Image (cartoon, rainbow, N blue to C red):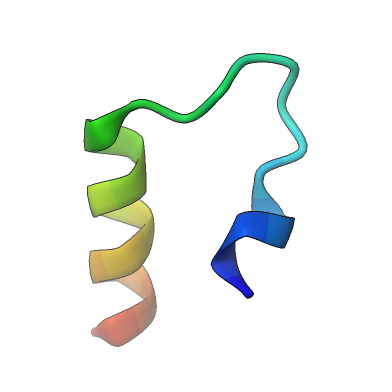
Length: 26
């Protein structure tokens, strides 16, 4: 669950999500 990694007070932006997803898959 990648969503569980977001513990920041602000919601992740599209760029943050893209970087997270790309980082996990590579």
